[in-house]
Length: 161
Ligand SMILES: [Zn+2]
Ligand SMILES: [Zn+2]
Image 1 (spheres, rainbow, N blue to C red):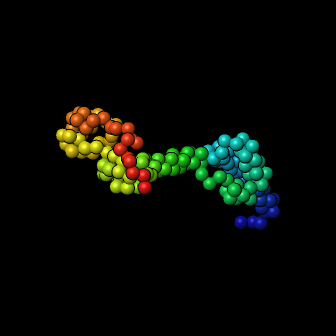
Image 2: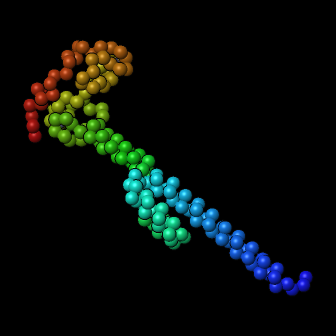
């Protein structure tokens, strides 16, 4: 194969053109990726524009900076986490405390051992525990009328410790 300088420079130009096209495509796709990514992470349009500019101007270093400083969670993940926290708080508040004294109680207690507040009543037919306001047993369908409708909560808690 004879040495031909013109074909070498032709190859070189070809490679250069290829590299330029490759980097242009990479640049555009990184901008597009950033655009999609930041859209799921913030509703702040200023932050969105800033992120896209960062990647558009600085290119590869820009994408590194963006990955470091972008919000850690997407809006969706943040929303899910809020829901979980709320549900957790709610279950702690609702299930485990006595309405009379605020102490921890158990799901299957019918009276608070500390302040004697009535917590639950039993079904006259199947003996399962019922919430005080319920007038019918959800397990067997028996009306719980002979367990007279719940007295007002403060009438039967004479002792405050
Ligand atoms: Zn209590
Ligand atoms: Zn029942």
